[in-house]
Length: 167
Image 1 (cartoon, rainbow, N blue to C red):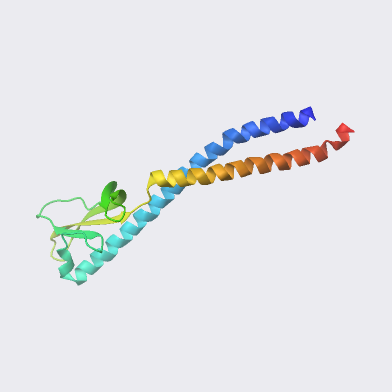
Image 2: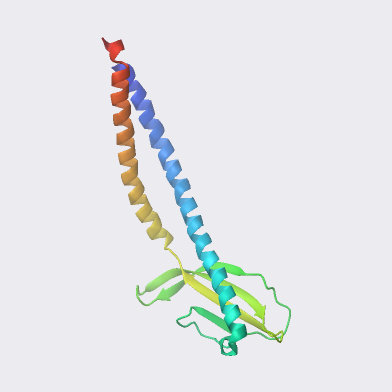
């Protein structure tokens, strides 16, 4: 019986080390996937907005964020980088009465006549602290159930396997 307890003790200690490492990697991968999906949506919105701006010239003067969550402002003639810039910042949200994180895409494009415009598109994102808290609580529950299940199954299996040694 001592050998069985000795084996389970090492198994439990190993699980106590491995599972938190796995949970940290899982959190980073989930957060990366969330940002990747939001960035893809911002780039898609950029393409749609620019396409509509060519069709409807009134969109080329949208200086304020409205329901569409984008602005288009004319820029003075000059040389600009047409590369997308994506950044994360905080913005006041009336619903929560708090500053919440948003992802912003800034880019420059030219109209048919070659006039430059700055397009800014924004999207709400998950709050990392709330995601971490919720994921932490879920992983703690999973962690406890996983360790108990693994130890219980191993205890029963080892008891059955070593039955002949005990007799």
